[in-house]
Image 1 (tube, rainbow, N blue to C red):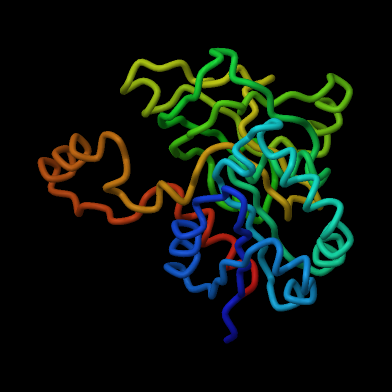
Image 2: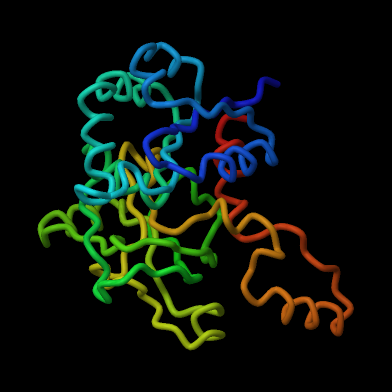
Length: 256
């Protein structure tokens, strides 16, 4: 059986390509990291892929606003090619800065604004799955890290109502094990309706602020040493996988 192939965008300050590539390869995909300029020069490269990834980072230094310059470049030079890609039964994901890029390119609805705190936030959050997407199949809740200064999701009330009606509000921040463990507010940035991720194209395109590629191993959990003691004392086998890995498994399984 042929493995699904992933193209991970790079260039101009995106910086989580390697973690993302490793996550996909660990669950059975093949993956290439490709500079956006190479894809602009040869958009036919997209025909090779079943999955496109816009990873996290600080594209163009966030100088004109997070994801704006990269999103405009994507829309102007590859917008038509990506729409052709999405006409096939394919998947696409934007993570953190990648989510910001997708909103600015018009591939998902809404916008990401400056955190209510006015500060960069780097911590773990708890999420609840609230929408339908192949990326989130059989996941109800998960804990993953965030690292952003402009993660407050915003959309006009009318647009929020449409997103909710179409089950396109994919993820919400909730008070779960991680937030309780560290006495942190569930919503880290002031997102409207606690939104952490949304979808488009019948759930096949997912944009989310948290970083699942940084939660693929049990030992990446912030309280894994405490959990280890609980497992050992309870005579249970120690897990090896982290909660974020299922997102990558779901993407690969979609094509099997």
